[in-house]
Image: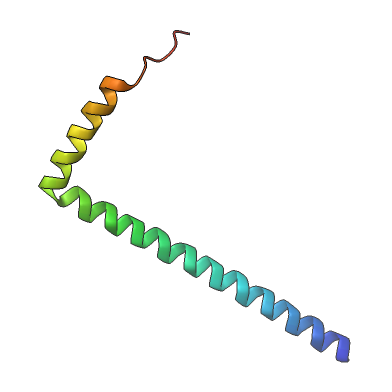
Length: 66
């Protein structure tokens, strides 16, 4: 009887750990999504990113031909 209770306790601990980890991953994804939306809504930031993309396009070597 004691081994069953212990096994159940371990199983519940594992489920709680997995649940906690999944919750943390969801929170991180939500936070990143919100940050991306906030940055995309900022016209100044979009202008700066466009300028950065143009600069990177100038220094990036061309893709190899297939």
